[in-house]
Length: 137
Image 1 (cartoon, rainbow, N blue to C red):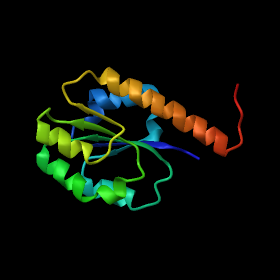
Image 2: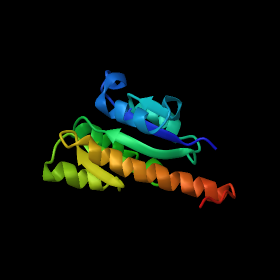
Image 3: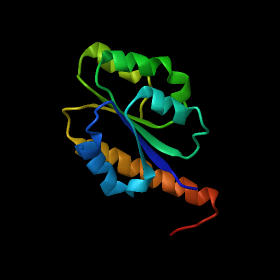
Image 4: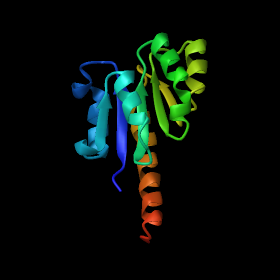
């Protein structure tokens, strides 16, 4: 089964961004799905999402964070990496309500995201191998 990384960012220039470049170093480009609107992402999330390895949310403002809070039930079974726009206490608290596996903000070093994502991909691949009956030493 193919597993996908989903990247959400309202930034229209996301295709040339540092975060996309980081993802492309970890997985083939055809395994990355990019969404620039919540509406587009909602269409994807309403489908079976057993093939989603990780959802990376790059949040632009508090309104966008509120919008994601309103669709939290669709995010419950998905591993999330959340990149916030600032470190304000209320923003961070609202971000934690989405129950991300990792939370950071846009001015932090993306190497932290890379490290966490690398581990998540490795664990996801091991679980997939176990489900497929593949044993590796």
